[in-house]
Amino acid sequence: MLSFVTIVYSGDYPLLELQARSFACFAQPDKVASIHVVLNDRDESGLRTRIEPILREYGPLRDKVRLLSGDDVLLQAGQWARRSLSDRLLIENRY
Image (cartoon, rainbow, N blue to C red):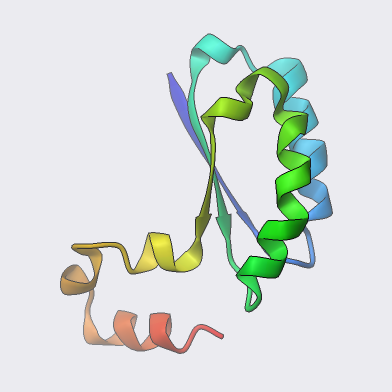
């Protein structure tokens, strides 16, 4: 089984609908473990609001889609301690 990750920001989020439809048409549900959509934007809550209606386009894969904020990925428990000082500075100042 495969897992997929898509990083999306407000400038290209409309392309996510095309990707979702492609997954629905061509991906075999039993071959897909998960689909992670990572929000990478200054206004992640606004982007999340625009993306949520698109998620139904994943069709039979919808239950395998998980929306994550950039902070969920970069600052999750255990990640911070493993990062170098330069990485931490980049993460904290990424906007």
